[in-house]
Amino acid sequence: MDPMDVTADSTRTVRVLIVDDQLPFRAVARTVIGMTAGFEVAAEAETGEAALVAVDEDPPDLVLMDINLPGINGIEATRRITSAHPDATVLLLSTYQAADLPSGADSCGAAGYVNKEEFGPKVVLDLWANRDQAATNDGA
Image 1 (cartoon, rainbow, N blue to C red):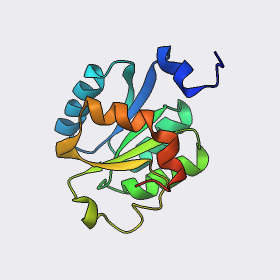
Image 2: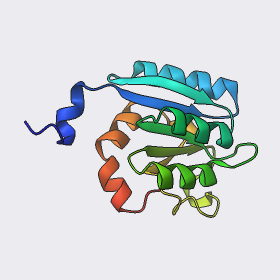
Image 3: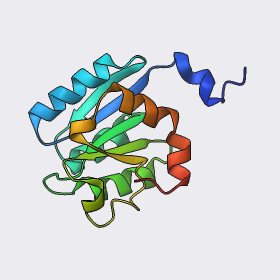
């Protein structure tokens, strides 16, 4: 089996960075990632700026990015992360309905958007399985 084949990496643990300014949602995200086979929380950040530092210091495979953050918002942080680390997959999370997403959410490089109320292990697994397709479709 080709080691570069995406199906071949199923034995590798996917490292996740959780970015949210709200501790309760970070706790929920930790629980969801803990329930998702093959995924582990690598780090957490409360701001867009802290997320940029965390990704530069120890790049994760997947970034769960809140849109509304103090300082640099999640859309701008995603744009910077995907530009500097094209192998990183970013999933935008917030309480917006998809039709009401802020400007730039659809062009920041995110692989997709999920309303926080719908976030769960199946969403993580589906996004990860389809991340290459989502990236070629210009994300969220």
